[in-house]
Amino acid sequence: MNYKVTPAEKSTVKIAFTFSAEEWAAANDKAYLENRKKFAVNGFRKGKAPKHVLEMYYGKGLFYEDALNDLFAEHYPAVLEKEKDAFTPVGDPALSVEEISEKKVVLTATTPVKPDVEIEKYTGIKIEKFEYNVTDADVEKEIDATRERLAEHVEVTDRPAQKGDTVNIDFEGKLDGKPFDGGSAQGYDLTLGAGQFIPGFEDQVAGMNVGETKDVNVTFPEDYQAEELKGKPAVFTVTLHKITGKVLPELNEEFAKKVGSDSIDAFRAKVRERLEKSAASRSLNETENAIITEIAKGAKAEIPDAMIEKQEEYSMQRMEYSLMYQGIKLDDYLKYIGQTREEYKKNFEEEARRTVLHQLIVEKLIKELKIEASSEEVEAKIAEQAASVGKEAAEYKKTMDPRQFEYIEGDIKVTKLFDYLQANNEMVTAKPEEK
Image 1: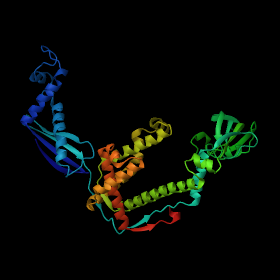
Image 2 (image 1 turned 180 degrees about the vertical axis):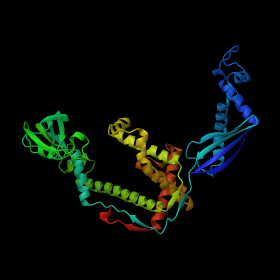
Image 3 (image 1 turned 60 degrees about the horizontal axis):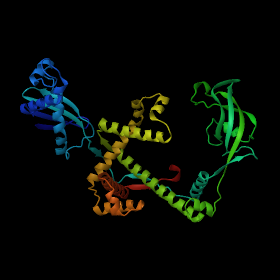
Image 4 (image 1 turned 30 degrees about the vertical axis):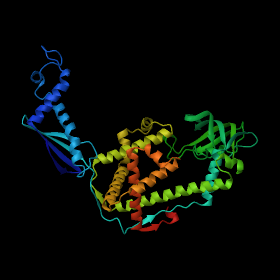
Protein backbone atom coordinates (compact mmCIF):
# COMPACT_ATOMS: atom_id res chain seq x y z
CA MET A 1 0.00 0.00 0.00
CA ASN A 2 1.16 3.50 -0.88
CA TYR A 3 -0.40 6.72 0.38
CA LYS A 4 -0.12 10.42 -0.29
CA VAL A 5 -1.26 13.29 1.96
CA THR A 6 -2.41 16.53 0.31
CA PRO A 7 -3.65 19.66 2.17
CA ALA A 8 -7.22 20.51 1.17
CA GLU A 9 -9.72 23.33 1.79
CA LYS A 10 -11.17 24.36 5.15
CA SER A 11 -8.58 22.65 7.35
CA THR A 12 -8.80 19.18 5.84
CA VAL A 13 -6.26 16.82 4.36
CA LYS A 14 -6.81 14.26 1.62
CA ILE A 15 -5.14 10.91 2.18
CA ALA A 16 -5.07 8.90 -1.06
CA PHE A 17 -4.49 5.17 -0.44
CA THR A 18 -3.33 3.13 -3.46
CA PHE A 19 -3.68 -0.65 -3.14
CA SER A 20 -2.04 -3.07 -5.57
CA ALA A 21 -3.85 -5.81 -7.49
CA GLU A 22 -2.57 -8.39 -5.00
CA GLU A 23 -3.74 -6.39 -1.96
CA TRP A 24 -7.13 -5.79 -3.57
CA ALA A 25 -7.58 -9.47 -4.43
CA ALA A 26 -6.60 -10.51 -0.90
CA ALA A 27 -9.09 -8.03 0.60
CA ASN A 28 -11.88 -9.42 -1.61
CA ASP A 29 -11.03 -12.98 -0.59
CA LYS A 30 -11.11 -11.97 3.07
CA ALA A 31 -14.47 -10.23 2.61
CA TYR A 32 -15.82 -13.37 0.90
CA LEU A 33 -14.74 -15.60 3.81
CA GLU A 34 -16.27 -13.21 6.36
CA ASN A 35 -19.61 -12.80 4.56
CA ARG A 36 -20.31 -15.95 2.53
CA LYS A 37 -22.69 -17.34 5.18
CA LYS A 38 -25.12 -14.54 4.35
CA PHE A 39 -25.78 -15.85 0.83
CA ALA A 40 -27.61 -18.88 -0.56
CA VAL A 41 -27.28 -20.35 -4.07
CA ASN A 42 -29.24 -23.31 -5.48
CA GLY A 43 -27.12 -26.45 -5.53
CA PHE A 44 -24.89 -25.35 -2.64
CA ARG A 45 -25.36 -25.46 1.09
CA LYS A 46 -25.72 -21.97 2.56
CA GLY A 47 -22.29 -20.45 3.03
CA LYS A 48 -20.54 -23.04 0.86
CA ALA A 49 -20.89 -21.50 -2.59
CA PRO A 50 -17.50 -20.57 -4.17
CA LYS A 51 -16.65 -16.89 -4.51
CA HIS A 52 -16.89 -16.83 -8.33
CA VAL A 53 -20.36 -18.46 -8.17
CA LEU A 54 -21.63 -15.82 -5.72
CA GLU A 55 -20.23 -13.06 -7.95
CA MET A 56 -22.03 -14.57 -10.95
CA TYR A 57 -25.35 -14.57 -9.07
CA TYR A 58 -25.05 -11.24 -7.17
CA GLY A 59 -22.60 -9.21 -9.23
CA LYS A 60 -18.86 -8.72 -9.52
CA GLY A 61 -18.79 -6.03 -6.84
CA LEU A 62 -20.59 -8.14 -4.21
CA PHE A 63 -17.73 -7.92 -1.71
CA TYR A 64 -16.22 -4.59 -2.77
CA GLU A 65 -17.71 -2.50 0.05
CA ASP A 66 -16.59 -4.90 2.77
CA ALA A 67 -13.16 -5.25 1.17
CA LEU A 68 -12.74 -1.45 1.03
CA ASN A 69 -13.85 -1.09 4.66
CA ASP A 70 -11.37 -3.76 5.74
CA LEU A 71 -8.51 -2.09 3.90
CA PHE A 72 -9.39 1.31 5.33
CA ALA A 73 -9.75 0.00 8.91
CA GLU A 74 -6.38 -1.74 8.63
CA HIS A 75 -4.32 1.11 7.15
CA TYR A 76 -5.96 4.43 8.20
CA PRO A 77 -4.89 4.30 11.90
CA ALA A 78 -1.32 3.40 10.87
CA VAL A 79 -1.14 6.41 8.54
CA LEU A 80 -2.46 8.72 11.27
CA GLU A 81 0.23 7.43 13.62
CA LYS A 82 2.97 8.01 11.00
CA GLU A 83 1.71 11.53 10.28
CA LYS A 84 0.94 12.56 13.89
CA ASP A 85 3.58 15.30 13.80
CA ALA A 86 2.20 16.70 10.54
CA PHE A 87 -1.51 16.99 11.43
CA THR A 88 -4.07 16.11 14.11
CA PRO A 89 -7.45 14.69 13.00
CA VAL A 90 -10.46 16.27 14.73
CA GLY A 91 -13.31 14.34 13.16
CA ASP A 92 -14.34 11.35 11.08
CA PRO A 93 -13.11 11.22 7.47
CA ALA A 94 -15.30 11.31 4.37
CA LEU A 95 -14.43 8.39 2.08
CA SER A 96 -14.55 8.25 -1.70
CA VAL A 97 -13.33 5.71 -4.27
CA GLU A 98 -11.25 7.45 -6.94
CA GLU A 99 -10.38 4.36 -8.98
CA ILE A 100 -11.29 0.69 -8.81
CA SER A 101 -10.16 -2.07 -11.15
CA GLU A 102 -8.47 -5.44 -11.01
CA LYS A 103 -5.10 -3.68 -11.34
CA LYS A 104 -5.41 -1.28 -8.41
CA VAL A 105 -7.75 0.61 -6.10
CA VAL A 106 -7.41 4.25 -5.02
CA LEU A 107 -9.38 5.18 -1.88
CA THR A 108 -9.39 8.78 -0.60
CA ALA A 109 -10.12 9.87 2.98
CA THR A 110 -10.85 13.58 3.43
CA THR A 111 -10.10 14.20 7.10
CA PRO A 112 -10.81 17.38 9.11
CA VAL A 113 -7.65 18.41 10.99
CA LYS A 114 -6.77 20.86 13.72
CA PRO A 115 -6.01 24.15 11.97
CA ASP A 116 -3.09 26.47 12.51
CA VAL A 117 -4.04 29.82 14.02
CA GLU A 118 -2.46 33.11 12.97
CA ILE A 119 -1.96 35.39 15.99
CA GLU A 120 -1.37 39.04 15.18
CA LYS A 121 -0.16 40.08 18.64
CA TYR A 122 -0.07 38.63 22.15
CA THR A 123 2.16 41.03 24.09
CA GLY A 124 2.08 44.79 24.66
CA ILE A 125 -1.73 44.91 24.63
CA LYS A 126 -3.82 46.98 27.05
CA ILE A 127 -6.08 44.46 28.81
CA GLU A 128 -8.61 44.79 31.61
CA LYS A 129 -7.77 43.02 34.85
CA PHE A 130 -10.53 42.04 37.26
CA GLU A 131 -10.23 42.12 41.03
CA TYR A 132 -13.03 41.10 43.37
CA ASN A 133 -12.65 41.84 47.07
CA VAL A 134 -14.61 40.44 50.00
CA THR A 135 -16.23 42.99 52.32
CA ASP A 136 -17.61 42.58 55.83
CA ALA A 137 -21.08 42.92 54.32
CA ASP A 138 -20.37 39.95 52.00
CA VAL A 139 -19.39 37.83 55.00
CA GLU A 140 -22.51 38.79 56.96
CA LYS A 141 -24.71 38.11 53.93
CA GLU A 142 -23.25 34.62 53.61
CA ILE A 143 -23.77 33.99 57.34
CA ASP A 144 -27.39 35.15 57.01
CA ALA A 145 -27.85 32.74 54.11
CA THR A 146 -26.55 29.90 56.31
CA ARG A 147 -29.00 30.90 59.04
CA GLU A 148 -31.79 30.85 56.45
CA ARG A 149 -30.86 27.29 55.43
CA LEU A 150 -30.88 26.17 59.07
CA ALA A 151 -34.04 28.07 60.00
CA GLU A 152 -36.79 26.29 61.93
CA HIS A 153 -40.21 26.35 60.25
CA VAL A 154 -43.08 26.95 62.66
CA GLU A 155 -46.79 27.52 62.24
CA VAL A 156 -47.86 31.12 62.91
CA THR A 157 -51.27 31.93 64.42
CA ASP A 158 -50.77 35.24 66.24
CA ARG A 159 -49.95 37.63 63.39
CA PRO A 160 -50.69 38.34 59.71
CA ALA A 161 -48.60 36.84 56.91
CA GLN A 162 -45.41 38.71 56.05
CA LYS A 163 -42.57 38.57 53.54
CA GLY A 164 -40.54 35.38 53.99
CA ASP A 165 -43.51 33.34 55.26
CA THR A 166 -44.90 30.36 53.37
CA VAL A 167 -48.68 30.55 53.13
CA ASN A 168 -51.11 27.80 52.16
CA ILE A 169 -53.88 29.31 50.02
CA ASP A 170 -56.81 28.64 47.72
CA PHE A 171 -57.18 31.06 44.83
CA GLU A 172 -59.46 31.57 41.85
CA GLY A 173 -58.63 34.06 39.13
CA LYS A 174 -61.16 35.81 36.87
CA LEU A 175 -61.01 38.01 33.79
CA ASP A 176 -64.06 40.23 33.38
CA GLY A 177 -65.78 38.12 36.03
CA LYS A 178 -65.11 34.79 34.28
CA PRO A 179 -62.63 32.08 35.43
CA PHE A 180 -59.77 31.29 33.05
CA ASP A 181 -57.65 28.17 32.50
CA GLY A 182 -54.80 27.73 34.96
CA GLY A 183 -56.06 30.55 37.17
CA SER A 184 -57.12 28.55 40.21
CA ALA A 185 -55.69 26.11 42.77
CA GLN A 186 -56.46 24.69 46.20
CA GLY A 187 -53.97 24.15 49.02
CA TYR A 188 -51.16 25.93 47.19
CA ASP A 189 -47.97 26.70 49.17
CA LEU A 190 -46.59 30.13 48.27
CA THR A 191 -43.47 31.75 49.75
CA LEU A 192 -44.11 35.49 49.97
CA GLY A 193 -41.34 37.55 48.39
CA ALA A 194 -40.02 34.71 46.24
CA GLY A 195 -41.50 36.20 43.06
CA GLN A 196 -43.36 33.03 42.09
CA PHE A 197 -46.53 34.86 41.04
CA ILE A 198 -47.12 37.91 38.86
CA PRO A 199 -46.10 41.30 40.31
CA GLY A 200 -48.40 42.59 43.04
CA PHE A 201 -49.97 39.25 43.99
CA GLU A 202 -47.62 38.32 46.84
CA ASP A 203 -47.53 41.90 48.18
CA GLN A 204 -51.32 41.87 48.60
CA VAL A 205 -51.39 38.43 50.25
CA ALA A 206 -48.91 39.76 52.83
CA GLY A 207 -51.00 41.17 55.69
CA MET A 208 -53.73 38.54 55.45
CA ASN A 209 -54.67 36.46 58.51
CA VAL A 210 -55.48 32.76 58.77
CA GLY A 211 -59.06 32.13 57.63
CA GLU A 212 -59.30 35.43 55.75
CA THR A 213 -60.63 35.71 52.17
CA LYS A 214 -59.62 38.66 50.02
CA ASP A 215 -59.77 39.84 46.40
CA VAL A 216 -56.31 40.51 44.94
CA ASN A 217 -56.22 42.84 41.94
CA VAL A 218 -53.32 42.43 39.51
CA THR A 219 -52.43 43.06 35.87
CA PHE A 220 -50.62 40.44 33.80
CA PRO A 221 -47.32 41.68 32.30
CA GLU A 222 -47.22 42.58 28.61
CA ASP A 223 -44.63 39.85 28.03
CA TYR A 224 -46.61 37.12 29.83
CA GLN A 225 -46.30 33.71 28.12
CA ALA A 226 -50.06 33.17 27.67
CA GLU A 227 -51.15 35.34 24.74
CA GLU A 228 -54.75 35.71 25.98
CA LEU A 229 -53.58 37.09 29.35
CA LYS A 230 -50.93 39.62 28.24
CA GLY A 231 -51.60 43.05 29.78
CA LYS A 232 -55.03 42.00 31.09
CA PRO A 233 -56.34 43.04 34.56
CA ALA A 234 -57.47 40.11 36.73
CA VAL A 235 -59.03 39.53 40.14
CA PHE A 236 -57.94 36.59 42.29
CA THR A 237 -60.12 35.56 45.22
CA VAL A 238 -57.67 34.28 47.81
CA THR A 239 -58.39 32.32 51.01
CA LEU A 240 -55.50 31.89 53.43
CA HIS A 241 -55.48 28.61 55.41
CA LYS A 242 -52.08 28.49 57.10
CA ILE A 243 -48.98 30.60 57.73
CA THR A 244 -45.59 28.99 58.23
CA GLY A 245 -42.83 31.29 59.41
CA LYS A 246 -39.09 30.90 59.80
CA VAL A 247 -37.21 31.23 63.07
CA LEU A 248 -33.56 31.94 62.37
CA PRO A 249 -30.99 30.39 64.72
CA GLU A 250 -29.21 32.84 66.98
CA LEU A 251 -25.56 33.63 66.34
CA ASN A 252 -24.20 31.85 69.38
CA GLU A 253 -21.81 29.05 70.27
CA GLU A 254 -24.49 26.39 69.65
CA PHE A 255 -24.98 27.67 66.10
CA ALA A 256 -21.20 27.76 65.53
CA LYS A 257 -20.81 24.14 66.58
CA LYS A 258 -23.70 23.13 64.32
CA VAL A 259 -21.80 24.55 61.33
CA GLY A 260 -18.48 22.97 62.34
CA SER A 261 -16.72 25.81 64.17
CA ASP A 262 -15.73 26.43 67.80
CA SER A 263 -17.05 29.98 67.92
CA ILE A 264 -18.87 32.60 65.87
CA ASP A 265 -15.57 34.40 65.25
CA ALA A 266 -14.02 31.16 63.96
CA PHE A 267 -17.04 30.56 61.69
CA ARG A 268 -16.86 34.14 60.44
CA ALA A 269 -13.16 33.67 59.63
CA LYS A 270 -13.91 30.41 57.81
CA VAL A 271 -16.65 32.10 55.75
CA ARG A 272 -14.30 34.94 54.83
CA GLU A 273 -11.57 32.51 53.78
CA ARG A 274 -14.00 30.61 51.54
CA LEU A 275 -15.36 33.81 49.98
CA GLU A 276 -11.85 35.14 49.38
CA LYS A 277 -10.86 31.93 47.59
CA SER A 278 -13.98 32.19 45.45
CA ALA A 279 -13.30 35.88 44.71
CA ALA A 280 -9.68 35.13 43.77
CA SER A 281 -10.81 32.34 41.46
CA ARG A 282 -13.40 34.61 39.85
CA SER A 283 -10.85 37.40 39.43
CA LEU A 284 -8.38 35.01 37.79
CA ASN A 285 -10.95 33.41 35.49
CA GLU A 286 -12.34 36.72 34.26
CA THR A 287 -8.88 38.21 33.80
CA GLU A 288 -7.68 35.20 31.81
CA ASN A 289 -10.84 35.35 29.69
CA ALA A 290 -10.22 39.06 29.05
CA ILE A 291 -6.62 38.32 27.98
CA ILE A 292 -7.53 35.57 25.52
CA THR A 293 -10.50 37.58 24.19
CA GLU A 294 -8.22 40.54 23.37
CA ILE A 295 -5.64 38.29 21.67
CA ALA A 296 -8.44 36.57 19.71
CA LYS A 297 -9.46 39.91 18.15
CA GLY A 298 -6.34 39.73 16.00
CA ALA A 299 -6.32 35.97 15.44
CA LYS A 300 -7.47 33.97 12.43
CA ALA A 301 -8.09 30.26 11.96
CA GLU A 302 -9.97 28.21 9.40
CA ILE A 303 -11.90 26.08 11.91
CA PRO A 304 -13.43 22.87 10.49
CA ASP A 305 -17.11 22.21 11.13
CA ALA A 306 -16.25 19.03 13.04
CA MET A 307 -14.60 21.04 15.83
CA ILE A 308 -17.54 23.44 16.09
CA GLU A 309 -20.06 20.60 16.17
CA LYS A 310 -18.09 18.76 18.86
CA GLN A 311 -18.05 21.86 21.07
CA GLU A 312 -21.78 22.45 20.44
CA GLU A 313 -22.48 18.88 21.55
CA TYR A 314 -20.42 19.43 24.70
CA SER A 315 -22.48 22.54 25.48
CA MET A 316 -25.66 20.55 24.92
CA GLN A 317 -24.46 17.92 27.40
CA ARG A 318 -23.79 20.60 30.01
CA MET A 319 -27.27 21.99 29.38
CA GLU A 320 -28.77 18.52 29.78
CA TYR A 321 -26.95 17.95 33.09
CA SER A 322 -28.08 21.36 34.33
CA LEU A 323 -31.71 20.54 33.56
CA MET A 324 -31.35 17.11 35.20
CA TYR A 325 -30.34 18.78 38.48
CA GLN A 326 -33.61 20.71 38.27
CA GLY A 327 -35.58 17.51 37.64
CA ILE A 328 -36.25 18.33 33.96
CA LYS A 329 -35.54 16.11 30.97
CA LEU A 330 -33.97 17.77 27.93
CA ASP A 331 -36.52 16.15 25.58
CA ASP A 332 -39.38 17.56 27.66
CA TYR A 333 -37.77 21.01 27.67
CA LEU A 334 -37.33 20.93 23.87
CA LYS A 335 -40.98 19.96 23.43
CA TYR A 336 -41.98 22.88 25.67
CA ILE A 337 -40.04 25.42 23.58
CA GLY A 338 -41.00 23.74 20.29
CA GLN A 339 -37.51 22.98 18.98
CA THR A 340 -35.64 19.88 17.87
CA ARG A 341 -32.27 18.97 19.35
CA GLU A 342 -30.47 20.12 16.20
CA GLU A 343 -32.34 23.45 16.15
CA TYR A 344 -31.56 24.14 19.79
CA LYS A 345 -27.90 23.14 19.36
CA LYS A 346 -27.48 26.04 16.92
CA ASN A 347 -27.90 28.42 19.89
CA PHE A 348 -24.40 27.38 20.96
CA GLU A 349 -22.74 27.89 17.56
CA GLU A 350 -21.25 31.34 18.21
CA GLU A 351 -20.06 30.35 21.69
CA ALA A 352 -18.61 27.11 20.31
CA ARG A 353 -16.68 28.94 17.56
CA ARG A 354 -15.26 31.39 20.11
CA THR A 355 -14.33 28.61 22.56
CA VAL A 356 -12.52 26.57 19.89
CA LEU A 357 -10.58 29.63 18.70
CA HIS A 358 -9.52 30.40 22.27
CA GLN A 359 -8.35 26.80 22.75
CA LEU A 360 -6.33 26.93 19.54
CA ILE A 361 -4.68 30.19 20.63
CA VAL A 362 -3.70 28.72 24.00
CA GLU A 363 -2.22 25.60 22.37
CA LYS A 364 -0.35 27.66 19.78
CA LEU A 365 1.18 30.00 22.37
CA ILE A 366 2.23 27.16 24.68
CA LYS A 367 4.02 25.56 21.73
CA GLU A 368 5.50 28.82 20.42
CA LEU A 369 6.77 29.89 23.86
CA LYS A 370 8.07 26.36 24.55
CA ILE A 371 6.26 26.18 27.88
CA GLU A 372 6.82 22.91 29.72
CA ALA A 373 5.74 21.31 32.99
CA SER A 374 8.66 19.85 34.92
CA SER A 375 8.40 16.56 36.76
CA GLU A 376 8.90 18.46 40.04
CA GLU A 377 5.95 20.73 39.26
CA VAL A 378 3.75 17.76 38.37
CA GLU A 379 4.74 15.96 41.59
CA ALA A 380 4.00 19.08 43.64
CA LYS A 381 0.55 19.36 42.07
CA ILE A 382 -0.17 15.69 42.75
CA ALA A 383 0.90 16.15 46.38
CA GLU A 384 -1.44 19.16 46.65
CA GLN A 385 -4.38 17.18 45.29
CA ALA A 386 -3.56 14.23 47.54
CA ALA A 387 -3.50 16.47 50.61
CA SER A 388 -6.92 17.91 49.68
CA VAL A 389 -8.46 14.43 50.01
CA GLY A 390 -6.40 13.42 53.03
CA LYS A 391 -4.02 10.99 51.29
CA GLU A 392 -0.29 10.59 50.89
CA ALA A 393 1.03 11.46 47.42
CA ALA A 394 2.35 7.95 46.76
CA GLU A 395 -0.96 6.37 47.73
CA TYR A 396 -2.92 8.91 45.69
CA LYS A 397 -0.81 8.33 42.54
CA LYS A 398 -1.77 4.65 42.54
CA THR A 399 -5.42 5.65 41.99
CA MET A 400 -4.68 8.04 39.10
CA ASP A 401 -5.12 7.13 35.45
CA PRO A 402 -3.00 8.56 32.57
CA ARG A 403 -5.62 11.19 31.73
CA GLN A 404 -5.25 12.72 35.19
CA PHE A 405 -1.49 13.07 34.71
CA GLU A 406 -2.10 14.70 31.32
CA TYR A 407 -4.65 17.08 32.83
CA ILE A 408 -2.25 18.14 35.61
CA GLU A 409 0.56 18.70 33.11
CA GLY A 410 -1.75 20.71 30.85
CA ASP A 411 -3.04 22.77 33.78
CA ILE A 412 0.50 23.71 34.80
CA LYS A 413 1.33 24.79 31.23
CA VAL A 414 -1.81 26.93 30.95
CA THR A 415 -1.10 28.58 34.33
CA LYS A 416 2.45 29.40 33.19
CA LEU A 417 1.13 30.80 29.91
CA PHE A 418 -1.27 33.22 31.59
CA ASP A 419 1.40 34.25 34.10
CA TYR A 420 3.57 35.14 31.09
CA LEU A 421 0.73 36.99 29.34
CA GLN A 422 -0.11 39.03 32.45
CA ALA A 423 3.55 39.95 32.87
CA ASN A 424 3.96 40.97 29.22
CA ASN A 425 0.80 43.01 28.67
CA GLU A 426 -0.50 46.27 30.14
CA MET A 427 -2.99 45.04 32.73
CA VAL A 428 -5.45 47.78 33.76
CA THR A 429 -7.63 47.12 36.81
CA ALA A 430 -11.33 47.51 36.01
CA LYS A 431 -13.17 50.20 37.93
CA PRO A 432 -15.82 48.89 40.37
CA GLU A 433 -18.71 50.27 38.28
CA GLU A 434 -17.37 48.43 35.20
CA LYS A 435 -17.40 44.99 36.81
